[in-house]
Structures are given as C-alpha cells and as structure tokens.
Length: 175
Picture 1 (cartoon, rainbow, N blue to C red):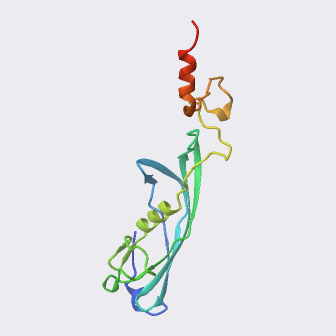
Picture 2: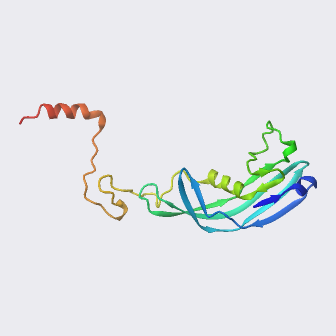
Picture 3: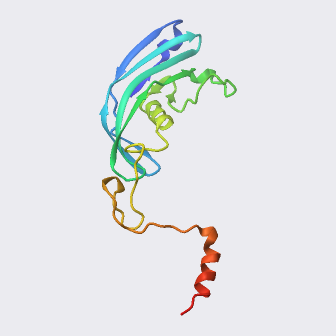
C-alpha cells in the first residue's frame, strides 16, 4: 500500500497515523517460501521532525512457518517488527546524508509500506531456525529424525587427518 507523505513533509510537526493491513502472504528468501500464518495490522506513525525530514515508525507482529535447519520439522517463527526510518522528499535527497536511510521503499512522495515491511523482515530474519535448542537433526545414513529416537546406524566418521595412517594399516594387513 502506498501512503502519500506530501502533507507531512510540508507542515511542521505534523503527525499522521495510519493502520494498514498486511498484504503479504509469504516471505521469500534465497529461493525458499515461508508462509505467513498469523499477522497483525501495521500501525504506522509519520512525524515531521524538521523541515523536509519525516520520521517513520511502525509496529507489527508476524508469524511465519519455516523448517528447522537441523531436522526439517515445521517451526513457527515469530517476528515483532518496529521499523524506525527517516525519509526526505525526493528533490532534497542528498546521498551524503548519513541520517537518511535507504529509500528503496519511497516512490516520490509515497511510501510503499509493503516494501518497507519486507525490508524489515529481511533484516530481522533469524540466521538459524531450530525447533528446540538441543535439536539432534537427521541421521546422515538413513535420514531418521534423531529427536524421535536413535536409529541404530553406524554414524562414526573417522578423522580425515588420520586417513594416511588408516591406508598404511590396510596395506600391511595380513591376509
């Protein structure tokens, strides 16, 4: 959804509050889709803090379904997003201004709330998703979920640094 901020840019100390429904159905990252299973409306606040500068604040809670990185069991990933950005009108944009954030979500005087929300999801997405802290993952031999019990497979992996010694033993083995 686009929200026009031209009035907020013009009027000093003007505050605009909007509640916007989340239109996202899923989040896509690195070729994987994560469906959105719960979402709240986003409460936005736009405040003119000085001439030509607007502070954008938001608040939303989103819950996604994603596979555990170790056992592939579906896990709920809850994100509480509180974006806070500073925007300027397009004619006063100065690339040297360090206080102004990336403005990829601005289209002229309009703020694209979905793009800003998507950027926030990307910034807050967890690096590792686990069903529980002590998740044992899958057996490397048979693929069984080790959280449900042992499978009995021999998962011993010899130290590759000692492979030369193992080759010597195999070569000197009496038949």
